[in-house]
Length: 356
Image (cartoon, rainbow, N blue to C red; front, side, top):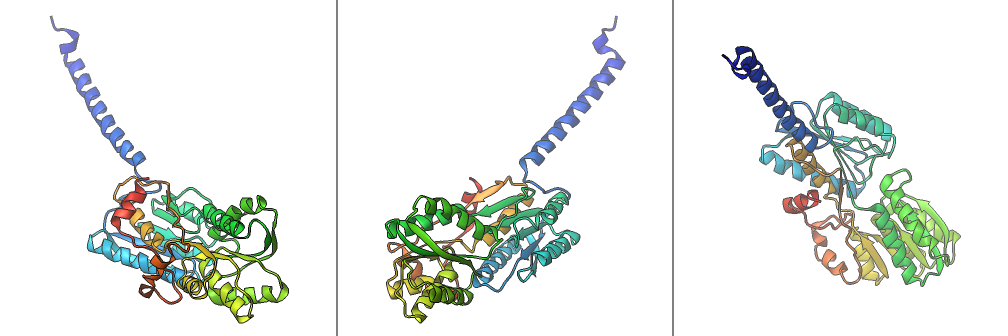
């Protein structure tokens, strides 16, 4: 007598169930890979990839240097057979134009978009749309609100502002009249630096903000803005400047008006660091590395290649003070006179940051 297990019907059923189980296992593995893979990416995307660089504006030297690191990274990835083309747009400071440019990249079905946001919220819809279309989206420096991106990359802008404010408070013994110089309003990196400074200022009620202003990240407009403030304020004990070229412009305005220099914070702008050394300023600075752009491209390609990348990549902030300024100035001739002296970077550094 045939046992049930040996019956043809059961054998066929067993084989069918085994096939279903095998298929399910394959699907599970695929799903596991998909869930382990980075956000947004889907569809049949294979190297070499087309990368879009949606620039908000290219005039400031910081942006030009950043674009340089992006272009250099793309050339390396082309050599490795991972990138085919780089599409570059310039919104000339207009967030609505940037939205149109990103939409054009979506329509062209680029594989990746790297972007500095001209507005923290205006770009949310188009960025989300790019993600929904399976495009790798890496947002760095000035960030969008939406989390529908592959990765966000930045230093901690709040920590930046807090560090600058603490140094100035310590320099002034927690008392004095100060001016606050901010970057453009509505840009997340500028707004976040200012927000980060506020708790420190609140903890030092002896620091009186006599005025504050927003200006472009360029020394010429910053110099004009500070000149106007100097005319209106005969007594100033310190400047909380939350940008590098802004600090250079402020120092030059003090000079032009024949005013005594006061303690000032800033960034790794070559002009500011050189003025600091030349005039023996009491200064403090940190660095927003231009190579964040290169890291954004590298991250996008790693994600397209199936690597799991962090949703947020935090880049540590260095401190530039009297003990470290010479190491930056020693490399000054490698950078434009109105540029930023940023640190070296390579694949090993990028892999370390992505392994966080």
